[in-house]
Amino acid sequence: MTSRSSGSSGSVGSVGPVGAVGSAAPAAEGADERLPPPPAFAFPAQTWKEIVHLLLNLPLGIVGFAYAVTWVCVGAGLSVTVVGLPVLAAGLIGGRMFGRFERSRARALLALRMDEPSRLPHTRDQSFFARLWTSLRDPVGWRSALYAFIRLPWGVLTFAIALTSLFVAWPVLPWIARALTNVDRAMVRALLAPSDELERRIAELESDRGTVVDTAAADLRRIERDLHDGAQARLVALAMGLGLAKEKLEEDPEAAAKMVDEAHGEVKLALQELRDLARGIHPAILTDRGLGPALSALAARCTVPVTVTVDLPDRPAPAIEGIAYFTVSELLQNISKHSGARTAAVEMWHADRRLLFQVRDDGRGGATTTGGSGLAGLAERLGSVDGLFRVDSPAGGPTTVTAELPWRDRVATAR
Image 1 (tube, rainbow, N blue to C red):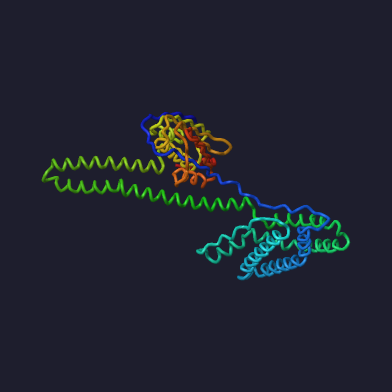
Image 2: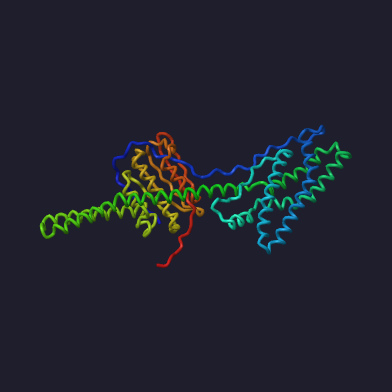
């Protein structure tokens, strides 16, 4: 569907330009690894570190294998009792500690840098069984246990090769040590390094959850304030006015009729305020007709002439539709109040399972998001649903705001 509309022009404010911010979280940085120096005939310090690492593989492999086998056998054997699962959970915590030690050894001896994985997401209000289930589902602990279990055969092999080469193949030992420790580096990365994508996603979801909760709380406070200060106050005054009119109905019918007439006017104002409040929560035109007509209605109320173009194959899910509508609404309000623009344009389209829209104006530009502007809140709101928010606003204009939201199909509901 394609819709075009133009709002009427009018006076605009002169307070600061529309701001901008990019909400897309930057890609998570991978492990910052400092490459060790190349091997050489004269044993450098890094070669000696690698030899020490290979010789330590056997005793640590024995310790890790014994721990993993003992813990798994005891925990599995006791799983039919009430203590089996707690034993497994405690063993996973020990596996985490073993993995932390091995990462420290890799940093010190193999010049391998990596971040520590996230802690278990325990909270104070969690019950014992919730904590137990969280510990049992810990992927970091299970990968550390697997690392400890498979290290023994490799530890025997590397210990034997390194010890023998010290006596019979020392001229080429630096290259042998480097080849063997490269396998160690690969194993540490594969089993002990945190998943960059997973860690980044967890951090994003935790941040987005807080944003959604704060936004919902702020919306509820706004609705409560609007009802208390607006419609509720008018309805209280209306009730008092009708009470006085009832008392005067027999004594002074003309005064009573005048008071009823005033009460009628108060009813109209209260209804208008309730309609405005309902429009602020979710406008009826958006629910009934979709984004095209709803954005055209927004453009008609804007003090700057706005051209609206909507090209969508179908309507998205109501939540995505609502976020897109209120984002455009706030951007158009900022254009009316702050940009000094003469014209503006809104375009919305669908591509690659994304809902994209762009709002442009020919105002003064120089957008900024410092000082807790409303646009920073818009960026957070879009980011909470995996959306993006970009602004190009050079000094002198024009300003272009581009936003993306994930496309989710509308689910048909029975009426």
